[in-house]
Image (cartoon, rainbow, N blue to C red; front, side, top):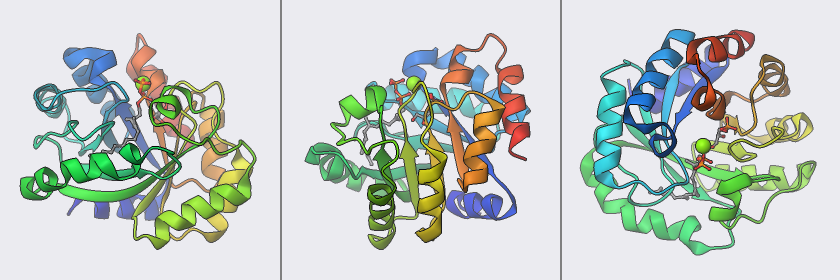
Length: 244
Ligand SMILES: CC(C)=CCC/C(C)=C/CC/C(C)=C/CC/C(C)=C/COP(=O)(O)OP(=O)(O)O
Ligand SMILES: O=P(O)(O)OC[C@@H](O)CO
Ligand SMILES: [Mg+2]
């Protein structure tokens, strides 16, 4: 079964958890270890990427090392057109819909298109939208940040993604954000959206994971908690358990 169908199948049965691993932060060995421990704790998918630029060679190595330690599907979450590897299972072919810079709207996608298509890797079209405070990815991606409680703008962006044919929409507060996006905004988006909604950025407690899922998020992403943990398994397990 392809990766997108696996995501859909899991999201129909319950909430999905994805672990974001950034080799620029965790190193190859650390990345492989996080993948292994996150798998033990019950995560469903590994996202590989970050806002720091990595070469294809580094991405190749990171994906290989991760796949040697886990059977979980590895999905590229690219920060640029170079962040690609054939060693992953799929790529989020994403556009940062609220960027004011065409680089993140369409230029990276144009640069990477032929390589992605000819590699045979599964491509999953995704709309990526960034909310306040946005953190590094908000600055790097030149995002016109959506206000914390701006339900109406959030709904319009999420629906624009869907009507453009994107298969997922990712609502991001920024990695390491002091607080995750608002539950009211998630609820409003879920009233209208027919594609799975991913929420990430600033989720670090079981309580907030639960609040986001109860508001309607289909998929949650955590990165920083595992990156900073001494014991990755023990830091992730309660969060993943709380959404099951
Ligand atoms: C589809 C292709 C080939 C490229 C898309 C390129 C786009 C649209 C990028 C969006 C902007 C961007 C820089 C995204 C990075 C997303 C990401 C992986 C964020 C997570 O990384 P963080 O954890 O925030 O990174 P740091 O920890 O380095 O801040
Ligand atoms: O690092 P955290 O805050 O968990 O955020 C994860 C992800 O949404 C970043 O793209
Ligand atoms: Mg990070």
